[in-house]
Image 1: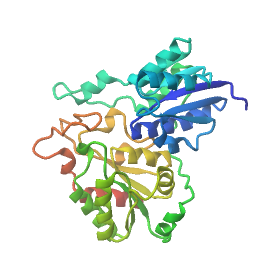
Image 2: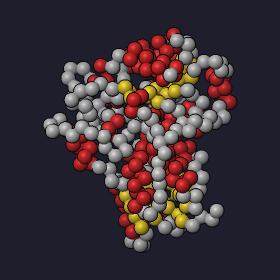
Image 3: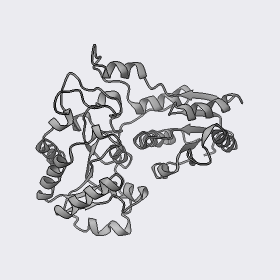
Amino acid sequence: MALTQKIIVLRFSAMGDVAMAASVLHEFSEQNPNTEIIMVSRSAFKPFFDRIPNLIFHPIEPKTVHKGIDGLYKLYQELRSYKPSAIADLHDNLRSRAISTFFRLTGTKIRRIDKGRAEKKRLTRNNNKVFKPLRKTVERYADVFRELGFAVKLSYKINKSPQEIPANAQDLFANKATKKIGISPFAQHVYKVYALEKMEAVIASLSGLGYELFIFGGGKTEQAAAENWAKTHKNAHNLIGNFNLTEELAIISNLDLMLSMDSSGMHMASLVGVPVISVWGPTHPYAGFLGYGQLESDCIQIDHPNRPNSIYGNKPCLCGVENCIDLIKPETIVDKIKEKLNG
């Protein structure tokens, strides 16, 4: 089929948000096969988009060649060569607005995401909180394409399609009889992280039950914790620092289940069709960031009148002396995983 339109899509960060955008673009591409997508994001996130038909990935390098207004104009000149028919701004930050403005001056059609900032403020405020589900972020992404005249209907189905296991991970999958669980225990903001000693109690219980455990996500500090867990508990394997993002996605695609915070691990699992048990603290699924195709019934959280008090998890919990996430017992998480795997 001939490609009749080109659309530039802008979403630069954060990792989980970009992964959610990729889930939407999978659906968009299937439903609009005559449209070419030029996805603009950080080069590290390219693997999220490698399996989307009719998509060209164009990296933004905000710390080097695309730094400042001169760098953004250079990026605009690069993107202008695609001769797009429209710009879909899924980010709505200073950089994406600058690029959109350059294109608007040439008459290119622009639409940008409505982040629902006012209603999110009402959801997270302490007084007169309006506690109700808000529009899902993936629907807000899809709305941008709808406003540009495209038909997009999100199925909310996660389609498990195991990819080839990387050569240096095949030994980890040698035992075909055991259930494989990914664990993504870290997050960008500390307030979204389940206490590490409690997470270790979860790992110890799951290890004792004979599950194969794969620990994902983080930097040097997190890698040290994961390596310690792997040494201490049988069937626990640290993947941090040992695989690139493409390889991690391939490994996740072969898992039976992912245990994650409200973080990118949840969205990566959605992208490759793996169900997720997610653990929530000061944030809440009502804000619209539940992983694509995941179930609210698989979210583990504490009911409290002060929850949520944060959209992104960058604020401490206001639930009293103890953080709401720490009120969750390790056995609650283990029982939910057993129920999910045996149900």
